[in-house]
Length: 258
Ligand code: NAD
Image (cartoon, rainbow, N blue to C red; front, side, top):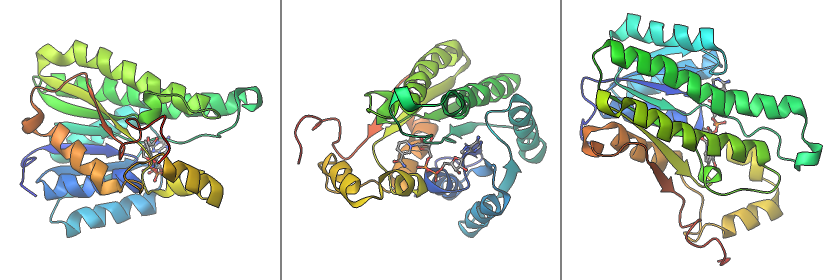
């Protein structure tokens, strides 16, 4: 990998596993200093060890993205340690409980929206403030999903949260374009992570969901991380307010089972 993020300071939320962990490692390989954030300290520290093993400099900061005071403190700690913030991947998210709307509890709706949508909004708020304080410039990628573009029966709260991330991304990009802060979203189909295991492990469900991916397999976390590194690099300098779909052909073949 070329060191296209050399000298930059990056943040990854939800960096304790899955896509976030692989992105933290690729940020480091690309030359960035990496702030890894999440709620689970031991797993966060493991990610920082992987960052070090990749030759990078990492810091774990415990924070729940749905709490304003914790996100504010996260950005402050990142700046205390590395002096600035140049790139961020707002990746933390949960699947919530996948049931029909008529069975969904208000508590689960609130939790899913609080983490997946309000969490991204809070991260944007404090990241953009910091980037503006530095005089502007920067790149932010928000984690959406193909569920930010299409619905899924039984996943209303999750789909609504990810559609919300798409709108938030566009509005934020317009607010920051003149300050040279680019804000985009990434929309993966199913990726091999602990979330995939929680959602689609039952054999019939697994078989059906796999059949929606014309490429014949689920994605790997590193395949999303590669795209995020590119979107955060200067090579994507004209991309803002957009989303990148990484789905193994899922959306192209939506009505044709393969
Ligand atoms: P994962 O469960 O391994 O990772 C989710 C991460 O977010 C974990 O590190 C978790 O601890 C963290 N997190 C959850 N709630 C948090 C909170 N309140 N504050 C801080 N951190 C929190 O699963 P993943 O698949 O790597 O998911 C990462 C993101 O990718 C999620 O936003 C998810 O919606 C999205 N996504 C996943 C898939 C997939 O198929 N795996 C597809 C599309 C989008």
